[in-house]
Length: 135
Image (tube, rainbow, N blue to C red):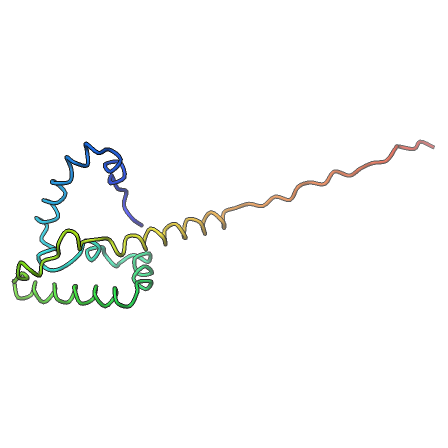
């Protein structure tokens, strides 16, 4: 499923966020995927059933845009080229579109697992005995 993340820990601490933000931006730019017009969620491997289900749940426009970005990046990679600077993915455009769906599916799967593992016990009914009669 999805990997653990330190992002919630970092985002809760403003001083740590200010310190990590430039480092995170540098790393994202150095990785080079934005120079090919890709978004970070385009790099998630599709070999997982959860990711495949999330891809099926994408709106048609978003699914088309993803395929377009992937094909364009593949063609650029084959020709050993990069997009012109004005066509690079900007940091404000690099928003997660697949990760929220993956998290939603994982929550659904966990809920289903919890429901299937639930054991229902019937309460035992105590018999009421009337007064004992001796003969």
